[in-house]
Length: 350
Image (cartoon, rainbow, N blue to C red; front, side):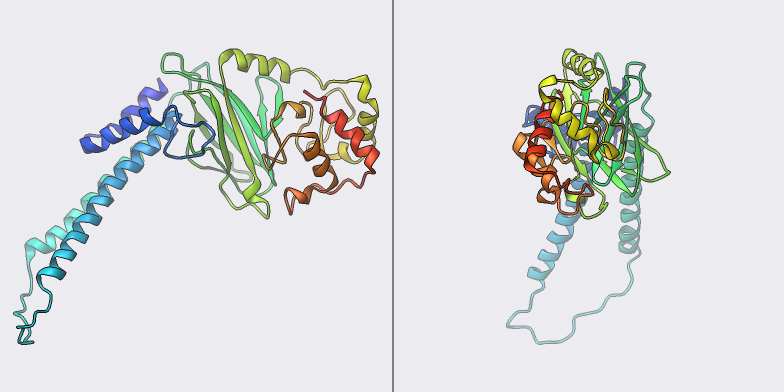
């Protein structure tokens, strides 16, 4: 329903047929493109497709203006260029043409009105799309410099890697995102799924996505939020219904407590880690940093700045600035044995 209503919004009577053909051809060609490429030209969700259609429509109009003005300018330069037999006298001066003045006044006004109405129609079609009962609710909280994802109906809290179910035209399962900020302005942007939406302190915003293809979609904060703004990355995993159900079931479990890494858990619980991080089933209840209950199940650490490997975990604990200069997490000042024990413990948290 959502996809159909938003799609109708971009089929405007004033839209040239060539632009419509270009949109359809591009979307069908790009549908199977590499999912990891954060390209605005490879939409995989209704909002992103609507934005691309609007962009191509605006480009067709502005491109037509560019080539018309450029063509007339080139013609005038060539047609009325100085010639060797010119006597240098001033040509006849003609003042006033009601038809010409009306044309260059009315035509730009009509173009602006058309662009305004088209843009407004797309905006309202996306913002006012009805929310189906099967929609998934996720609260997104922007932090310096990482993402927190809360699933209020599922009782899940995770970080930096958002999991959502795939949607379809026959069985729409969109994901509605409630956007909050814990500190400064951030901007949630996954180019293939939706446009940029800001996270503003004390001013909640909302957006939605309905990915039509499974895969991994990359995004990042699109608002300068501090030193590490460029490395405030995120990943959206679009799962099949079965994969998503399995992920939810796993995320609901408490943190793994493996007796073979009890020394690492002891290091975690007796150091400053517990002031910022949370692991269910332990004394760690901090909320300033990412929830680490299922850290080992994530592909990346440091908000996507590095792969989640034991070597990178060790480097991150010893010196976060190695990956993210300006990161708010301090170096833990642990000895090599403690770091090894802590890393061994963290790698069991699947």
